[in-house]
Image (cartoon, rainbow, N blue to C red; front, side, top):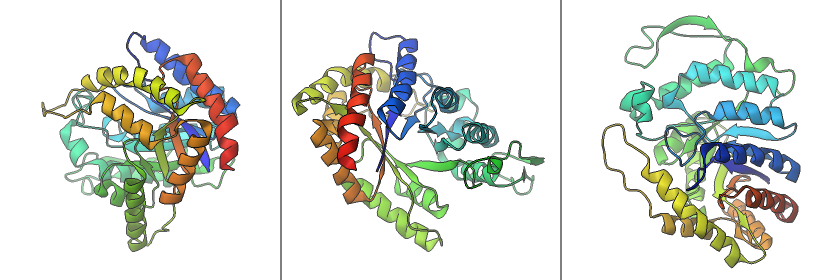
Length: 344
């Protein structure tokens, strides 16, 4: 079982953006010290829900600050960037980190980001498969082009160009380039990932039953597409540890609702559509019920149970739910010292 930290760089009420980013960087440093497997970095634009606007940029810093830790994006928002530009960055990080980088991508949401970066609503609603396939080609082939005929009605068209640097030319690893995973929130996105043989990143809001169903759908679809039915899917969650479960829950219930309300209320849709946001207190309680929030014994039991029910063996756990740097560092150290040994 491989356990990592999920980093949102969340800006809690009363905090500055620099404070949130400093806590994010310290999370990676302490995660490596504590023996965790990885950190996974979220990307958001124009909202305090998370103040990291470029997960690949922050990943580069964290790869430079660590020596063993794997660093992944969870996720880079593909409709807000050119797939070739993202592919170049991923290849660069893969080569210079000796294979420690994982590129996670997703559609994001129907937010004003689409207006600012020029993709428009169509990039979110219809073009993600096209963008994903162009990205996959860039990470796998020596030369890539999108002829005007092939790109008819598509988002991009350009003459064939050499891929520089080529991710497959890493001095370490199996020559296959960086791992690529896809955030999946619907049956459609599960099938999209499975048809391409790409692992899934499954969100914090999902319980074990939902995740197990998505894994089974992925397996069926992968088999039908001639792909291996096994993949290293990643389950996102929340982890808060304390000597008493009630104290761990109290920590999150004091801090997270204010951050969730501030962060979620700041999202603006690109087309003015109304979005129903979750009740912050109820959502925090749900996360406490679903994930390893409590004593180290309870946390280990919940992770083991999720793995048994779903077949997932990789976890990305939000450890900054207190909003406090010292508490986050202690949480990470306890996760490494008191939970990981119980998981074997």
